[in-house]
Length: 188
Length: 186
Image 1 (tube, rainbow over the protein chains, first blue to last red):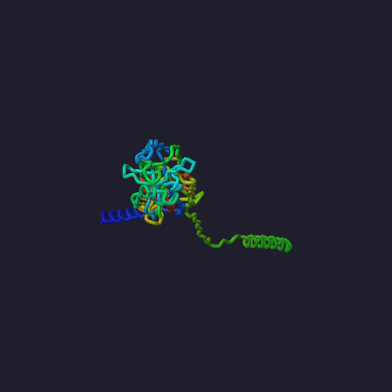
Image 2 (tube, each protein chain N blue to C red; image 1 turned 60 degrees about the horizontal axis):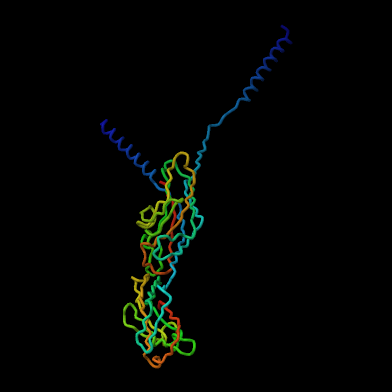
């Protein structure tokens, strides 16, 4: 009987100790304070060239007048969702006078050829997003998916002037200068 | 003894009796004692105030370093019961996978959001803390509560960074989110 009473007392004491511990462990929380976060990743599309000048030593009436150097265009982009394509274009401001001697003698864009990444050499005869009518060429078109919204590509361009067409075999000796533009566009 | 002498003694005796009676009337009389129970409650409390409630980030694609436009100081003030052992300050998001989002399914997870507390190292919010989503929190600081700081305060100067080195394909956009700061004493 005495042992049983002692046991009951011990149980009660343990219960009291547990209740005290639970009361101690109860957490007190502050109110929640919030910080509004706003992070902007700006859209960008850049194009850089390995060089900005190409020379040609022309041979009268020749189809093959290669440029002195190839140029690599590196296009890099960070795009918003919704963009579906990146195009890289080469163009002249005027199709009739891509290069000129300044004295009325011109080399048209149709005689100026670019081979992109060792592909076929193609004349600049299309109307593209930039430049004069029939004075351009789309070098590349990249479909944009979820996997390449941030990416880049390189286009190695090899140049040639073909002097066999139309009156070009009669092109007078002179120095012909012109400006070829390379530009990229993300759409839509 | 003459009758005048007897009368004099009687008068003196009467005067003494009258004096005793007057003394008996001046004795204090006390009521029983009534008690008033007093109870004064000093409620425990924890409060946080922030020096600013908005931070902007100009992100650079793939960059590990995209610091926030401003640091935020959290001032925690407390008044605690003797049974409290420590007080912690937490920062957390409600979701670890979408701490910030552009609303079009592109997210910056809490693992790429970092806080430096009081010029300490930048640490990502990858822990499960008492508040917020799983793996979306960080214990910013912890204070042991002793006899001499049951009432106290502390400041935590938080600087923020978004690490995009693990998110090189994050598309351009505006990403928004809510970081919550909260304290707990236990």
